[in-house]
Length: 185
Image (cartoon, rainbow, N blue to C red; front, side):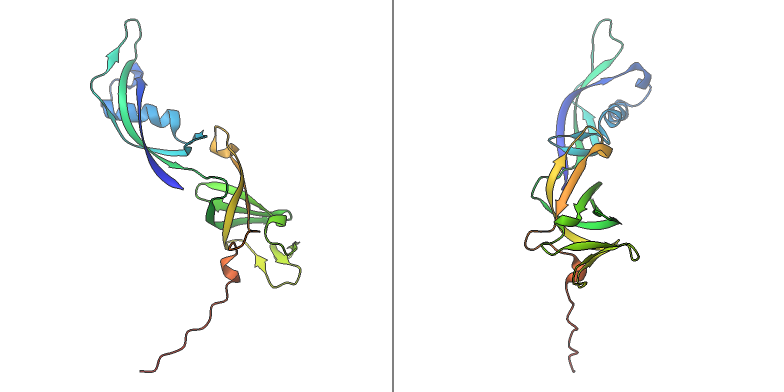
């Protein structure tokens, strides 16, 4: 889930950024340090927002950097085991489907689609139930539940697996739309 987190910390501004406005220099340091990184508690740190120094900077004798106590907001995206998402199918493979959840990609293994057995239809590049009634293809919207997460420091190293085997999880295309009755005036 997306969240804006407020943080306060001491930020070291190097002399190479001394020509910039203080707020811009602090924001640049925070951007380089955090954006695109993954924190086990906060999830993916997407964007630094509204960075402001609290008071004036501190200079330490013999150190060319200036240190500012800073309050800033960080836009983050985090997932938790058992959290339910509406995901978009990005790609279909023999072993399952890759789905998009926010900025992350997750794997829906073929065994985790349903209690029914699914097989890979190579010709149509879709996953099909044995009776042929249920299908999953690229672009479908699925309700999925996070089953496992492995967070590393970089967003590209995050591994997420999802399931649809629980009750209430399904492909939106499986829901039959009843035609609306025309109301006579």
